[in-house]
Image (cartoon, rainbow, N blue to C red; front, side):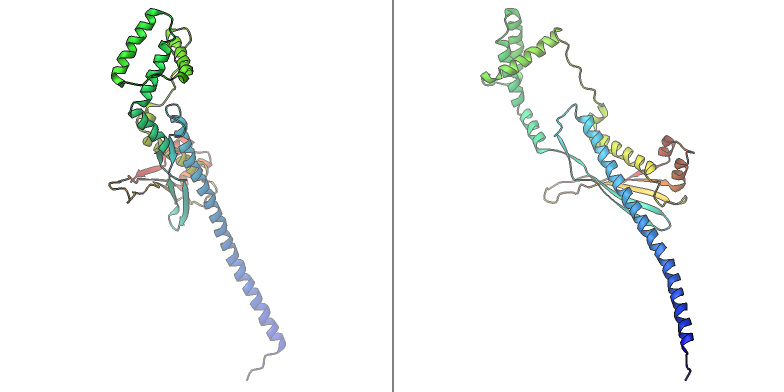
Length: 282
C-alpha cells in the first residue's frame, strides 16, 4: 500500500484547480460569444419587423388620397425570427401581414352599389336648384337633374336638414363656373390604384433590402457566408369558408457577406449594393 503525504496532496489539489480554471476560461468566452450573437440577431429581427411596418405605412399614405383612412387594415403584426446556420450564414423568417378591406368600408361600398349615395346627391341637387334665382339657369339645372334621375331611379323628397349640403353644392358649382378656383385633384400613383397588392409588395421589398444592407453591420456574417431573409404572407386559407384559396407567396432575399463588407468599407454605393441582392419569388 502506497502512502501519500500531505505535500503531495496539496500539489495535486493545486494542479486540479489550475486545470479547472483553464477549462472554465475556455468555455465562458464561447458562451459569451453565443449570447452576443443571439442579441445581435434579436436586434435585426426588430429592424426587419420595423421595415415591414414602414412599407405598410408607405402604402397607406399612397392610397389616403383616394380612399378613407379606415378602408384598409393589416391582418396582424409583422414578426421575424433569425437563425444561424453553420457553414451558410444567417437566415431570417419574416411574416408579412396582408391588407384587408374593413367591414365599414365594405358597407359603404354596398350602400353606393345600391344607389343610396347617388340618391342623396340627387336630393342635394334638388335643394340647391330651389335656391337658384336665375330662371334660365334653374331650367338648365332641372333638365340635367331629370337626366340624372333616369339613371338613379325615383328618390324621396329632399329633407330640410340638407340646406347645408345645398350650400356646399352651390359653392362647388360656383367654383366650376370660375368664380372660385376648384381644388386640384389629388396626385395618386396609377400603379397603386391599379394593383395595390403589387404596390405593397414593392414597398415592403424595398424596405427589407435596405434594412439588410444598412443595418447588418453588427451581424456575424463572414465574407463567404450569406445573409438571407425569407418574407412570406401570414394569410392562411380559411377552412370554414368554402372555396377560400388565399394565395400564399414568399420572396427570398439574400446577399453575400463580402458585398456587405464592401458597402460598409465605402467601396460600393448603396444603389450598387441593392443590385447585388438576389431575390426569388415562390
